[in-house]
Length: 332
Image (cartoon, rainbow, N blue to C red; front, side, top):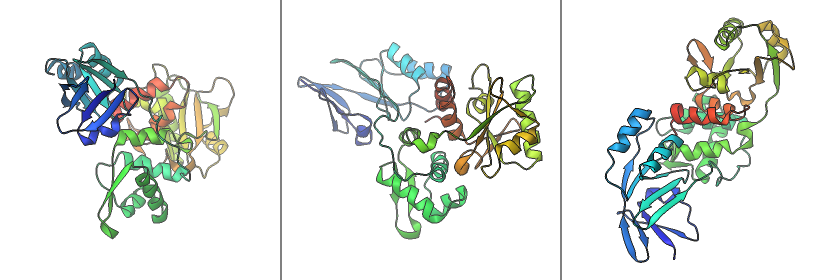
């Protein structure tokens, strides 16, 4: 006999129905099994909680079973702690753990697995989506186009694609029309699944004398900024500046203005190309996904935070670093 999970409408798309699990809308959440209704209480999870705050939040939850913590992105460490305390959780990726009088339901989702790849999305569109992900409110086509230096037609095409995929919602008509991201976690999962968002860039590995990664970053920053070269530290090295990088940064990745030859930039740095012992990787920044909308961190120019996450994913053993950065810094 299937189990029926009844939730407020806004959470329905977070749960994938299965042969044994039905989903329905109801103002009063509950789990129905063998004709018996087990009430559930929903508790939104505040974003970006530290370990102490997270444990305090869990300690304040009402007696279990029937407690269901909901959040757009519930980090792995939070899910583990909730499971240990016999509290349930549900997030927009489809991770579900529910403890009730009917037993325990556990579903572990794969990020982006249910998202289709989009045809026609180019690197410049990726730049627009990266900006859209960190935008706090509704945007107009012209406002987003100006921010990311794209034409109105390019920006409109990207927003239409996302709206058709259910990833953004629109309000108003004509010049007053605005778009708002429906779920940033879902949009980032979708973007992560797009090949163009994580394409293999033209690269040049070089060696630069520096005793520590921090010394290398400062040296690169000083020489490239002094020469007027648009650039941005990215991936695990940039994540380290936020306090969530690898314990030992062996190779630092820097995205470079696509109008410049990487060999020319290496010469500016006084660096020698090498296949062994490189500590710096220069990447051609196709679509300016890294060198557009940069920010400064500890006096170092770094790529947009979404780009740091996506680039870290592609590095050797970078998935754990990327996930920690996403949970702690992006928060969605």
